[in-house]
Image 1 (cartoon, one colour):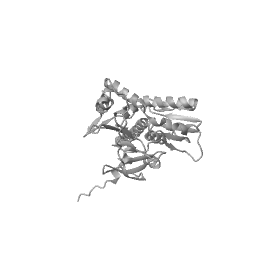
Image 2 (spheres, one colour; image 1 turned 135 degrees about the vertical axis):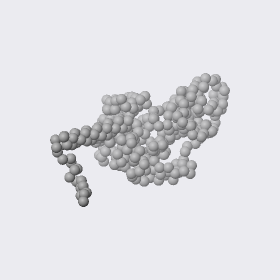
Image 3 (cartoon, one colour; image 1 turned 180 degrees about the vertical axis):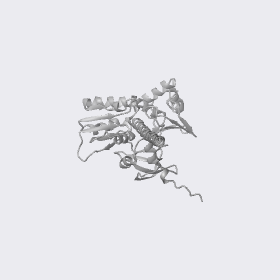
Image 4 (cartoon, one colour; image 1 turned 135 degrees about the horizontal axis):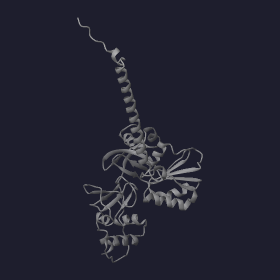
Length: 328
Protein backbone atom coordinates (compact mmCIF):
# COMPACT_ATOMS: atom_id res chain seq x y z
CA UNK A 1 0.00 0.00 0.00
CA UNK A 2 1.31 3.45 -0.91
CA UNK A 3 0.86 6.84 0.75
CA UNK A 4 -2.18 7.81 -1.30
CA UNK A 5 -3.87 4.52 -0.42
CA UNK A 6 -3.34 5.25 3.28
CA UNK A 7 -5.34 8.43 2.82
CA UNK A 8 -8.35 6.32 1.82
CA UNK A 9 -8.40 4.36 5.11
CA UNK A 10 -11.69 5.31 6.82
CA UNK A 11 -11.05 7.45 9.90
CA UNK A 12 -13.59 5.42 11.88
CA UNK A 13 -11.66 2.21 11.12
CA UNK A 14 -8.37 3.85 12.08
CA UNK A 15 -9.82 5.06 15.39
CA UNK A 16 -11.41 1.66 16.06
CA UNK A 17 -8.03 -0.04 15.65
CA UNK A 18 -6.71 2.35 18.31
CA UNK A 19 -9.60 1.41 20.63
CA UNK A 20 -11.90 4.41 20.10
CA UNK A 21 -15.58 4.06 19.20
CA UNK A 22 -18.08 6.85 18.47
CA UNK A 23 -20.42 8.00 21.22
CA UNK A 24 -23.18 8.91 18.78
CA UNK A 25 -23.92 9.26 15.06
CA UNK A 26 -25.81 12.06 13.33
CA UNK A 27 -26.16 11.64 9.57
CA UNK A 28 -22.66 11.54 8.09
CA UNK A 29 -21.09 12.69 11.36
CA UNK A 30 -19.59 10.49 14.08
CA UNK A 31 -18.97 12.06 17.50
CA UNK A 32 -16.22 10.83 19.82
CA UNK A 33 -14.71 11.65 23.16
CA UNK A 34 -11.45 13.26 21.95
CA UNK A 35 -9.09 10.24 21.63
CA UNK A 36 -5.83 12.02 22.55
CA UNK A 37 -6.92 14.25 25.46
CA UNK A 38 -9.25 14.08 28.45
CA UNK A 39 -12.84 15.31 28.26
CA UNK A 40 -16.35 14.26 29.30
CA UNK A 41 -18.46 15.88 26.56
CA UNK A 42 -17.83 14.53 23.04
CA UNK A 43 -16.36 17.35 20.94
CA UNK A 44 -14.44 15.36 18.34
CA UNK A 45 -16.28 14.95 15.02
CA UNK A 46 -15.57 12.73 12.03
CA UNK A 47 -17.27 13.45 8.71
CA UNK A 48 -17.47 10.00 7.12
CA UNK A 49 -18.41 11.40 3.70
CA UNK A 50 -15.39 13.72 3.44
CA UNK A 51 -13.12 11.61 5.70
CA UNK A 52 -12.11 14.65 7.71
CA UNK A 53 -12.02 15.19 11.47
CA UNK A 54 -12.46 18.29 13.58
CA UNK A 55 -11.76 18.79 17.28
CA UNK A 56 -14.03 21.56 18.58
CA UNK A 57 -12.15 21.56 21.86
CA UNK A 58 -8.86 22.49 20.16
CA UNK A 59 -10.30 24.33 17.18
CA UNK A 60 -8.34 22.26 14.65
CA UNK A 61 -8.86 19.35 12.29
CA UNK A 62 -7.67 17.62 9.13
CA UNK A 63 -7.23 14.21 7.51
CA UNK A 64 -5.88 10.88 8.74
CA UNK A 65 -2.27 12.13 8.68
CA UNK A 66 -2.91 15.19 10.82
CA UNK A 67 -4.93 12.98 13.20
CA UNK A 68 -1.92 10.67 13.56
CA UNK A 69 0.11 13.80 14.26
CA UNK A 70 -2.14 14.63 17.23
CA UNK A 71 -1.55 11.18 18.69
CA UNK A 72 2.20 11.48 18.16
CA UNK A 73 2.42 15.21 18.94
CA UNK A 74 4.54 15.43 15.81
CA UNK A 75 4.32 17.27 12.49
CA UNK A 76 6.73 14.84 10.82
CA UNK A 77 4.79 13.38 7.87
CA UNK A 78 6.83 10.18 7.66
CA UNK A 79 6.32 9.46 11.36
CA UNK A 80 2.59 9.99 10.87
CA UNK A 81 2.48 7.60 7.90
CA UNK A 82 4.39 4.90 9.78
CA UNK A 83 2.10 5.27 12.80
CA UNK A 84 -0.98 4.74 10.60
CA UNK A 85 0.63 1.76 8.88
CA UNK A 86 1.46 0.11 12.19
CA UNK A 87 -2.06 0.71 13.53
CA UNK A 88 -3.61 -0.73 10.35
CA UNK A 89 -1.07 -3.60 10.26
CA UNK A 90 -0.08 -2.90 6.67
CA UNK A 91 3.15 -2.59 4.70
CA UNK A 92 3.69 0.73 2.95
CA UNK A 93 5.71 1.36 -0.20
CA UNK A 94 6.63 4.70 -1.71
CA UNK A 95 7.43 6.75 1.38
CA UNK A 96 7.86 10.00 -0.51
CA UNK A 97 5.87 12.84 0.99
CA UNK A 98 3.17 13.98 -1.47
CA UNK A 99 3.63 17.44 -2.93
CA UNK A 100 0.10 18.52 -1.99
CA UNK A 101 -1.64 18.09 1.34
CA UNK A 102 -5.30 19.13 1.50
CA UNK A 103 -6.12 22.05 3.77
CA UNK A 104 -8.35 20.98 6.66
CA UNK A 105 -11.94 22.12 6.43
CA UNK A 106 -12.99 23.92 9.60
CA UNK A 107 -16.45 25.03 10.62
CA UNK A 108 -17.03 28.72 10.02
CA UNK A 109 -18.66 30.71 12.79
CA UNK A 110 -20.72 33.37 11.05
CA UNK A 111 -21.84 36.79 12.31
CA UNK A 112 -20.52 36.32 15.85
CA UNK A 113 -22.14 38.72 18.30
CA UNK A 114 -20.69 39.26 21.78
CA UNK A 115 -23.14 40.57 24.39
CA UNK A 116 -23.34 40.54 28.22
CA UNK A 117 -24.38 37.28 29.86
CA UNK A 118 -27.74 37.83 31.56
CA UNK A 119 -30.19 35.42 33.16
CA UNK A 120 -31.25 32.92 30.52
CA UNK A 121 -31.16 29.17 29.80
CA UNK A 122 -27.36 29.60 29.61
CA UNK A 123 -27.12 30.79 33.22
CA UNK A 124 -29.53 28.00 34.21
CA UNK A 125 -27.09 25.53 32.65
CA UNK A 126 -24.19 27.08 34.57
CA UNK A 127 -26.23 27.02 37.80
CA UNK A 128 -26.73 23.28 37.32
CA UNK A 129 -22.94 23.03 37.34
CA UNK A 130 -22.76 25.05 40.54
CA UNK A 131 -21.79 28.41 39.00
CA UNK A 132 -23.92 31.37 40.20
CA UNK A 133 -24.96 33.98 37.65
CA UNK A 134 -23.16 36.80 39.48
CA UNK A 135 -19.80 35.05 38.96
CA UNK A 136 -20.53 33.79 35.45
CA UNK A 137 -21.60 37.23 34.20
CA UNK A 138 -18.39 38.79 35.60
CA UNK A 139 -16.06 36.53 33.60
CA UNK A 140 -18.14 35.27 30.67
CA UNK A 141 -20.27 36.66 27.87
CA UNK A 142 -23.05 35.44 25.63
CA UNK A 143 -22.14 34.54 22.06
CA UNK A 144 -24.74 34.62 19.29
CA UNK A 145 -23.39 33.03 16.12
CA UNK A 146 -24.31 31.20 12.95
CA UNK A 147 -23.08 27.91 11.48
CA UNK A 148 -24.23 26.84 8.01
CA UNK A 149 -27.09 29.32 8.02
CA UNK A 150 -28.47 28.37 11.45
CA UNK A 151 -28.28 30.60 14.53
CA UNK A 152 -27.04 29.43 17.93
CA UNK A 153 -26.14 30.94 21.30
CA UNK A 154 -23.68 29.82 23.96
CA UNK A 155 -21.54 30.93 26.90
CA UNK A 156 -18.29 32.54 25.76
CA UNK A 157 -15.02 32.77 27.68
CA UNK A 158 -12.41 35.03 26.02
CA UNK A 159 -8.77 34.07 25.52
CA UNK A 160 -5.65 36.20 25.04
CA UNK A 161 -5.60 35.79 21.24
CA UNK A 162 -9.09 37.17 20.63
CA UNK A 163 -10.84 33.79 20.42
CA UNK A 164 -13.49 32.31 22.69
CA UNK A 165 -14.14 29.04 24.44
CA UNK A 166 -17.74 28.16 23.58
CA UNK A 167 -19.97 26.16 25.90
CA UNK A 168 -23.64 25.28 26.22
CA UNK A 169 -25.65 22.33 27.38
CA UNK A 170 -25.35 20.83 23.88
CA UNK A 171 -22.04 22.09 22.51
CA UNK A 172 -18.41 22.40 23.51
CA UNK A 173 -15.85 24.03 21.26
CA UNK A 174 -13.98 27.22 20.48
CA UNK A 175 -14.07 30.14 18.10
CA UNK A 176 -10.48 30.41 16.81
CA UNK A 177 -7.80 31.38 17.48
CA UNK A 178 -7.26 28.94 20.33
CA UNK A 179 -5.16 30.23 23.21
CA UNK A 180 -4.88 30.55 26.99
CA UNK A 181 -6.77 33.03 29.20
CA UNK A 182 -5.12 35.09 31.95
CA UNK A 183 -7.38 36.63 34.62
CA UNK A 184 -5.55 39.21 36.72
CA UNK A 185 -6.61 39.68 40.35
CA UNK A 186 -5.34 43.27 40.51
CA UNK A 187 -3.55 45.84 38.42
CA UNK A 188 -0.30 45.11 40.24
CA UNK A 189 1.54 41.80 39.59
CA UNK A 190 0.61 38.95 41.93
CA UNK A 191 3.13 36.58 43.51
CA UNK A 192 0.99 33.52 42.83
CA UNK A 193 -0.76 32.20 39.73
CA UNK A 194 -3.33 29.40 39.77
CA UNK A 195 -3.52 27.13 36.72
CA UNK A 196 -6.71 25.49 35.44
CA UNK A 197 -7.37 23.25 32.44
CA UNK A 198 -10.74 24.75 31.53
CA UNK A 199 -12.80 27.79 32.42
CA UNK A 200 -15.47 25.72 34.23
CA UNK A 201 -12.81 24.78 36.78
CA UNK A 202 -11.74 28.43 37.04
CA UNK A 203 -15.33 29.56 37.66
CA UNK A 204 -15.66 26.74 40.22
CA UNK A 205 -12.58 28.01 42.08
CA UNK A 206 -14.00 31.53 42.19
CA UNK A 207 -17.32 30.14 43.45
CA UNK A 208 -15.55 28.14 46.17
CA UNK A 209 -13.50 31.18 47.16
CA UNK A 210 -10.09 29.52 46.76
CA UNK A 211 -8.51 32.00 44.34
CA UNK A 212 -7.64 34.65 46.96
CA UNK A 213 -5.43 37.41 45.53
CA UNK A 214 -3.78 35.14 42.97
CA UNK A 215 -3.87 35.61 39.21
CA UNK A 216 -5.50 32.75 37.29
CA UNK A 217 -4.31 31.13 34.07
CA UNK A 218 -6.79 28.96 32.15
CA UNK A 219 -5.11 26.67 29.62
CA UNK A 220 -8.34 25.97 27.69
CA UNK A 221 -6.59 22.74 26.65
CA UNK A 222 -3.59 20.85 28.01
CA UNK A 223 -2.14 21.21 24.51
CA UNK A 224 -1.59 24.90 25.37
CA UNK A 225 0.85 24.21 28.19
CA UNK A 226 3.77 25.51 26.10
CA UNK A 227 1.92 28.79 25.50
CA UNK A 228 1.48 29.11 29.25
CA UNK A 229 5.16 28.71 30.03
CA UNK A 230 6.25 32.27 29.27
CA UNK A 231 3.33 33.76 31.18
CA UNK A 232 4.20 31.81 34.34
CA UNK A 233 7.90 32.72 34.43
CA UNK A 234 7.41 35.78 36.62
CA UNK A 235 5.41 34.12 39.42
CA UNK A 236 6.99 32.95 42.67
CA UNK A 237 4.28 30.36 43.30
CA UNK A 238 2.20 28.30 40.85
CA UNK A 239 -0.82 26.39 42.16
CA UNK A 240 -2.25 23.72 39.85
CA UNK A 241 -5.93 22.76 39.90
CA UNK A 242 -5.63 20.24 37.06
CA UNK A 243 -7.84 17.27 36.23
CA UNK A 244 -7.12 14.08 38.12
CA UNK A 245 -6.47 12.03 34.99
CA UNK A 246 -3.51 11.09 32.82
CA UNK A 247 -3.59 14.34 30.82
CA UNK A 248 -3.67 16.38 34.02
CA UNK A 249 -0.77 14.43 35.51
CA UNK A 250 1.31 14.92 32.36
CA UNK A 251 0.63 18.66 32.45
CA UNK A 252 1.58 18.86 36.12
CA UNK A 253 4.79 16.96 35.39
CA UNK A 254 5.65 19.33 32.51
CA UNK A 255 5.14 22.41 34.69
CA UNK A 256 7.08 20.87 37.59
CA UNK A 257 9.98 20.05 35.27
CA UNK A 258 10.17 23.71 34.22
CA UNK A 259 9.43 25.48 37.51
CA UNK A 260 10.48 22.97 40.17
CA UNK A 261 9.45 23.74 43.75
CA UNK A 262 7.45 26.77 42.69
CA UNK A 263 4.71 24.37 41.54
CA UNK A 264 2.14 23.01 44.01
CA UNK A 265 -0.46 20.35 43.21
CA UNK A 266 -3.78 21.61 44.63
CA UNK A 267 -5.87 18.65 43.40
CA UNK A 268 -6.06 17.11 46.89
CA UNK A 269 -8.97 19.53 47.47
CA UNK A 270 -11.12 17.46 45.12
CA UNK A 271 -9.71 14.01 45.86
CA UNK A 272 -12.18 11.40 44.61
CA UNK A 273 -13.49 13.71 41.85
CA UNK A 274 -12.29 14.04 38.27
CA UNK A 275 -11.99 17.81 38.43
CA UNK A 276 -12.81 20.89 40.49
CA UNK A 277 -16.22 21.45 38.89
CA UNK A 278 -17.34 17.92 39.76
CA UNK A 279 -16.30 18.61 43.36
CA UNK A 280 -18.26 21.88 43.33
CA UNK A 281 -21.37 20.12 42.04
CA UNK A 282 -21.15 17.48 44.77
CA UNK A 283 -20.53 20.14 47.43
CA UNK A 284 -23.50 22.21 46.21
CA UNK A 285 -25.73 19.13 46.21
CA UNK A 286 -24.72 18.25 49.79
CA UNK A 287 -25.41 21.81 50.95
CA UNK A 288 -28.87 21.73 49.37
CA UNK A 289 -29.62 18.34 50.94
CA UNK A 290 -28.44 19.56 54.37
CA UNK A 291 -30.60 22.68 54.04
CA UNK A 292 -33.60 20.58 53.09
CA UNK A 293 -32.93 18.21 56.00
CA UNK A 294 -32.70 21.17 58.38
CA UNK A 295 -36.03 22.51 57.13
CA UNK A 296 -37.63 19.09 57.56
CA UNK A 297 -36.30 18.88 61.12
CA UNK A 298 -37.73 22.32 61.92
CA UNK A 299 -41.10 21.26 60.55
CA UNK A 300 -41.03 18.03 62.58
CA UNK A 301 -40.23 19.91 65.79
CA UNK A 302 -43.06 22.34 65.08
CA UNK A 303 -45.49 19.45 64.59
CA UNK A 304 -44.36 17.87 67.85
CA UNK A 305 -44.94 21.13 69.73
CA UNK A 306 -48.43 21.49 68.25
CA UNK A 307 -49.27 17.94 69.32
CA UNK A 308 -48.10 18.71 72.87
CA UNK A 309 -50.28 21.82 72.93
CA UNK A 310 -53.34 19.87 71.79
CA UNK A 311 -52.79 17.03 74.29
CA UNK A 312 -52.30 19.55 77.11
CA UNK A 313 -55.53 21.36 76.36
CA UNK A 314 -53.82 24.19 74.61
CA UNK A 315 -55.28 26.08 71.71
CA UNK A 316 -54.28 25.15 68.17
CA UNK A 317 -52.28 27.97 66.63
CA UNK A 318 -54.78 28.76 63.88
CA UNK A 319 -58.06 28.09 65.76
CA UNK A 320 -58.62 31.73 66.70
CA UNK A 321 -58.58 32.78 63.10
CA UNK A 322 -61.47 30.52 62.16
CA UNK A 323 -64.92 32.20 62.21
CA UNK A 324 -67.81 29.75 62.52
CA UNK A 325 -71.17 30.76 61.05
CA UNK A 326 -73.87 31.42 63.63
CA UNK A 327 -76.84 29.03 63.46
CA UNK A 328 -80.20 30.85 63.54
